[in-house]
Amino acid sequence: EVQLVESGGGSVQAGGSLRLSCTASGITFDDSDVGWYRQAPGNACELISTTAPEGTWYKQSVKGRFTISLDNAKNTVYLQMNSLKPEDAAVYYCAAGPSLVDPDDGNCGGTVAVRGGYWGQGTQVTVSS
Image (cartoon, rainbow, N blue to C red):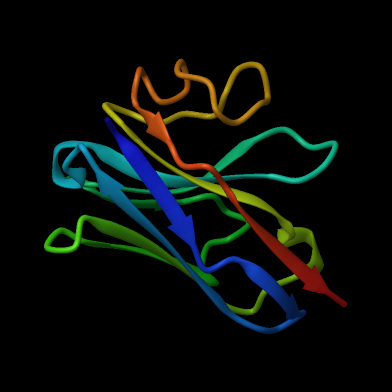
């Protein structure tokens, strides 16, 4: 059974930092594109960062503040989030698959956006102003 388990969410004040972790079992991250999505209430699910053999990618809204990294030995992907803003508040999901894109239906958790890959259960990030 494949599982992606996230941790590290929580509540911080604006300007603070959090580090999210996502550890996989049943799959090997170095065989996949791996990334982080987020979904705030009333907003569409959005892909915010990916890491793959060809490199890393960041959505413009998080570029320069968030850093994605992969520890293959631990089969764990991290998202270091600095200079957090209230608009970063959301449920954050890790995902892994042959390729990752924004979901057409606006919802996190479907298989199409991860091309048949896998999602974590999500972790809540709250940022107070």
